[in-house]
Length: 300
Image 1 (cartoon, one colour):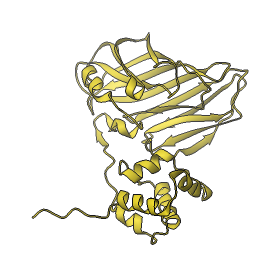
Image 2 (cartoon, rainbow, N blue to C red; image 1 turned 135 degrees about the horizontal axis):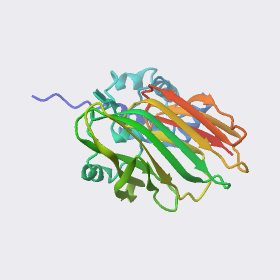
Image 3 (spheres, rainbow, N blue to C red; image 1 turned 45 degrees about the vertical axis):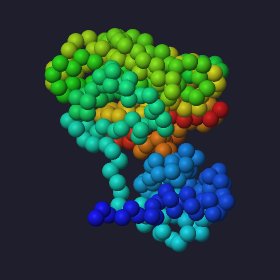
């Protein structure tokens, strides 16, 4: 006989309690904010539908507050979560590797493109150093990003890698990936359904196991409105990451800070407050971090 399917699961109980309460997700989000807990509407929706589950301490604290708001017994929802599940990431020779779903809220249409361009498998590549230089114009719009990388091959005959860059929802067009130095841009595939440009980066030679490659390429953006953040989501953990954002001297932000996220559906964790220098630049550095996303956010 097969095991019975449990009738009460975290998403079913949460969804039922929300329906009975008559509260909207926006109202629930405000209740959490009143307790100093930041949870996005998309995260609450994912929890309700069972697409993701709360696991980090901040998320579990949010669940405890939700129990109070929805008048559920203390610890009821938390108990339904059970032991922490694997996050679908693993450590290979090339270091930590994450699924794309950890980094973005939508990856529609991405899988066949990555299969076509032969993205390096887990364990084939190590990110030693990543340096992003991001520039905004006098209207506070994203203009371009210079990406400089130092990578090491963990296998023989590695000739290329794949990079992904995603447009904001209201951008005029998908980003363009342009050749810089030490590499060439090969095949480029747009993925409009999830706003990605996927590009093949060709190394200047075929790498043997243990060999490194250093290269630079540029991303052009087609923003329509003011930007409020720059971030990098990475499947692979990097040994060293440097992010720079340069504002136009006539359009400096009123506040700016660096943040990290465990996953796209997890809260941002404030790392440090940043103050633009005399030439409008801010930067943040990260060493050996296992967070999936690092970024810089600002207000105007």
